[in-house]
Length: 127
Image 1 (tube, rainbow, N blue to C red):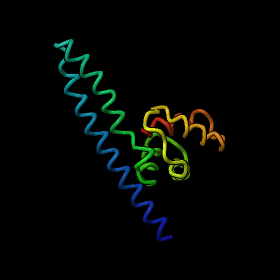
Image 2: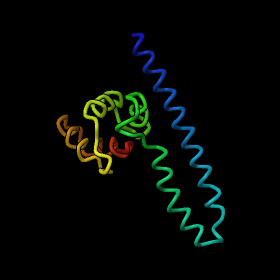
Image 3: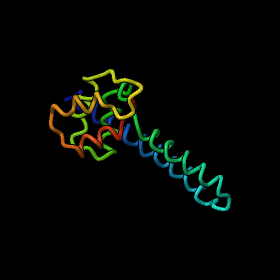
């Protein structure tokens, strides 16, 4: 039970951190949306805010702790995120040059999670 309590506390802390980072990303987007007068700046900022937001919400499948991965999966809407975080950690390492995490998808398929769940898991992770 002590380990479960520690995991819950770490997951909650990671969730709060994720929401805090998401809030920071949102305020970065607001000023760029408020400056539509410069079309070049607007398109450049739109392109950079997309990847910045996704990289801020993604955690590394290779280096993040199991609790950090579980928090990211939870924020991505994955049901039973702790269990899937365990599987992500179990099959490390993942190739750094594979943004689609094909190796992870292959290993997750053994558990028949369904395409939607697999997509949610991969959307929360970076190699």
